[in-house]
Image (cartoon, rainbow, N blue to C red; front, side):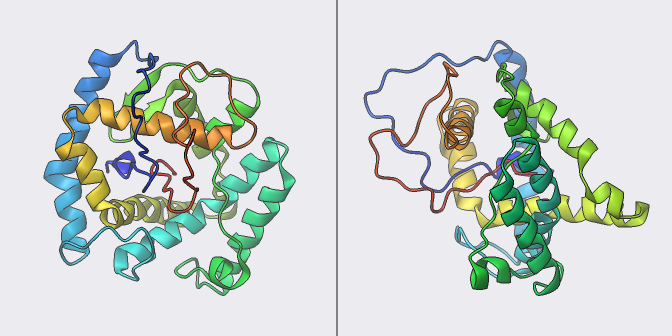
Length: 261
């Protein structure tokens, strides 16, 4: 399933204006473009039609919960990802977001019926604080490395790719669930990405099918969002950073992390 095609930040694709283009660390561009073409074909022929069929047809970009079946599964998938985020916040030395995500998981797993609903956010203002092991490596000082487009998974960097592997290996749920339960949790997470693809379909379509160069556009937006996301904790010295919020009054409201596992 083309998870990262749920790319984009609603509103984070801020215009660059007359700002000169910055060099992107993309030494594997030729191979990356071939993989992007494969991923785009997968979305065209499978993921987009499937998500539309599962969700009962076309629907506008909501940017929020709509209560449809895919949205409910997406909520459950997001809830299942929280223990891993708690662990990463601990590894980053950030106890406050670790506690916040932990409380969110407990509330939504109980009062939210296994994560189908979000009373933690609606009633207790316990919004999710996103993170992953790629960010943990950033905090530990590992360089970002070159840009990569991964088969099925889509836009990434070498550091984020390593982080994905480690996130799967250290997921606390693996120690709490039996084999059948782990398989079920994995299936829910995969289906939840279809929910994101459906929810933000218009945004994804505009990048993939309305851009003059969908590869370059997806790469730019991914790096914009990733650098901004990491820079929220004190900035970054990465020479490839493009801050979409520089000289802008844009807020974080409505930003979608398309690449959350």
